[in-house]
Length: 315
Image (tube, rainbow, N blue to C red; front, side):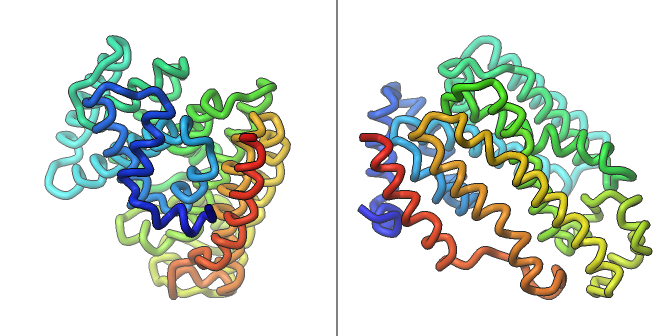
C-alpha cells in the first residue's frame, strides 16, 4: 500500500488497528488516543504523514505527544483573547500543576492528557521534559521578544527540543547520543517555523528571532513591522536559515542510532520540515508575501520511497 493510499484509508479504522497493535484496550484511553490522533492530523500534516512510516504499534504514542503539545498551545492562544496577563498566567499555572499531579498519579480525567500520561508511563519518559514544556508555554504569555539566541533557546528548548526528547524512548535508541541529536533536530524544526511565520508572529505582537542578530543587519522591530523584504531583512533571514541547516546536519547521525523501523519516519520529518527553509529561499526570503510550504508533490516524493523502506525494515 502506498503512502498516498494509506492517507486515504478511513482514519478511524486505521487508528483502531494501531491501537490494537499497541495493546491499548481500555475504551477511555482509546478515545483519548483518537482525540490526539485527530489533533495531529489537523494541525501537523507533515508530522502526521511522517508518523505513518512508523510501525502501527508506535503511532498512537507519537500522536499522544504531538496532540498534547498542540492542545497546550491552543490553550495558551485561547487564553490570550479575553483575559488579563495576570489571569492568563494564573490559569496556566493551575492547569500545569493539575497536569503534573496527574502525571504523578498515572491517570487523568482530561480527554486529551489521559493518553499522554499513559504514554509517559508506558515508555518511562522523564517528567522534567514536561515541566520544561510547560515553562515555555508560560513564557509565551508574557515574553514578546528575545534579545539573544541564548534567550530564545530557553524558550525553544521547552517548546520544541523536549518534544524530540520525549519521542526518543518510543523510537528505541541504541545510543544515548541520540538524545542530543534529537535536541538539535527539534530546535531546527522550531527555528524553521519561526522563519516562515515572521509575519504571523508580528500580528500576535511577537518576534521569535534574536534581536541582536537582526540588529547586526540593521533590522529592528520597526523594520520588520513594515513587512517588506528589504535587502537587510533578506540577509538577516539568510543567517537564520544557515543556523537551521547547521542544526539539521548535526542531527543526522542520530537517526542511525534509532531502531531501524523508526529511522524512515524521523528522516522524512527532517527532510520535509527543514525543507521549509528551502521554500523560504525559493521565494527570496519574502516571508511576508506568502507562507512558505513544502509542496505536496515534494512530500509524496520523500514519503513514497520512505514507505517502501519502512515496510521492508519491519520484515
